Image 1: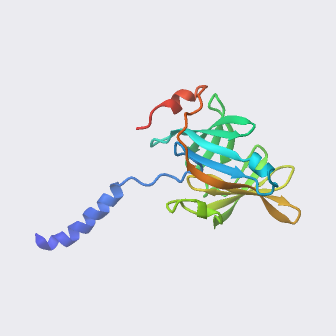
Image 2: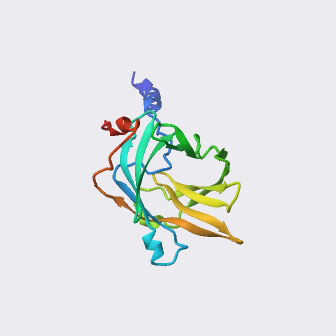
Amino acid sequence: MRKALPLVAPALLLLSLACQPRPASPVYGPWEEGLTLAFEDPSQPQPQRSADRLQVRVARSSMAPGPPRLVQLDLTNLRGQLSLVVRYENGGTALLSDSGQVVAQTLPPGFPATTAWVDRGVQFRVLGRATWEGAALLPGTSDPVGVWVEAQPPQGPRRRTLYLPNLGEVESQEERGNGWVTVNRLVARGFVDLPPAPLAGPLASTLAKPRP
């Protein structure tokens, strides 16, 4: 009986590994409740640059296993506040209306394996992976390697955006002349425990459910 153990043990190990849950698809956007991100446009001079700083805070999150994964984002600057609801699913990111309809598909399902798509007349394509140069402001547990995506609108300049797992957009560049200029960059990251903005619309009941 003892001679059979060396053969049985590896089989049991492989079976246990096969039964373990597989990791979910990466989420290329902020989803942790209380996570607060601050963005600035480095191409602007001061004091305009600081005056136009945008704060994005995860107010509500419904990230339980299985779809849908809905997140309420509160966007705030000196001019006011705007709340958005996004859905993360299979690597994709969709902006939803109050009625739950998709307004814009920021990233397609299957991203980043899906390398080209069109949304509202804008052509997108994945350029490749890269390590973010500003990753020093992130905690050591954050993945600094993201995916660059280029957007070509019917009119106007091209735009390139770097998306990181669990953060989403961390830097965007716009084509100007013969070069690329950074027009949006993540400059601060932290957690803020503030009262969430009131929910409204059909999505409110879903987002308001407590997480398990």
